[in-house]
Length: 260
Image (cartoon, rainbow, N blue to C red; front, side, top):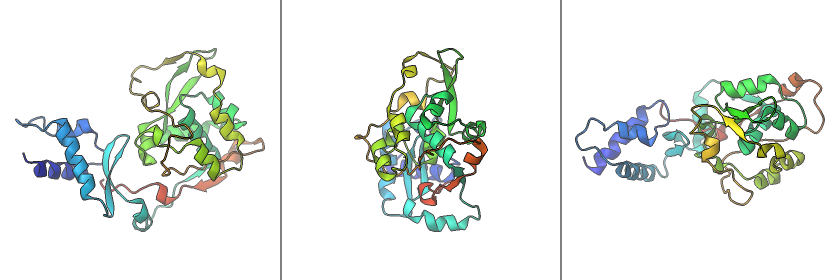
């Protein structure tokens, strides 16, 4: 098999796949071949494919779950006009909760409430779990055994990220939005409860939270993620009112997958 044939096979597989393809999945394509390509050869062919699509309307992007073809951000505005669906809307409280989990995982619900200064509606956690953006990864070894929440690969895929260190640094977010810096101060402070031992759930050896490094204010150069994580300065008397404060996620931040 020539390198050109290998590249064409990988391209065809990516075009027909209904989601990102991991390196292991590429390797499985050649299990029945007598002379199967090595993993290094597959990686090289993928790198060549990425070069081939430079300057075109679609790109070969590596996200947390693997490789996928997707529309480039600068053209998403026009491609989105093909779809009648309205942009998904999320409340400010939901986005704040998601941001805190992403930067401070694994974290308990009580710790999130301490940072935000208000209680969290159960529907927010349920929505994030239904979207498979967060999951329960264990329980903190303290009285009550509160659940530990962490982000998932689906969360990274949705926001076009390969790993957690691709998140913008807290310094960048504070420069962008200074409405309530108290929220970010809460994110940067490490509570004493975090020092307690945690007991994990079975099958969680591949936790994204454990395998990726959370960025410090100086080590991230990625501006792709534009989560609005502004905090409310007054206590909410009703959690439902908090959820009603909807905001849009811009279409440019959510690229359109090319392969379905």
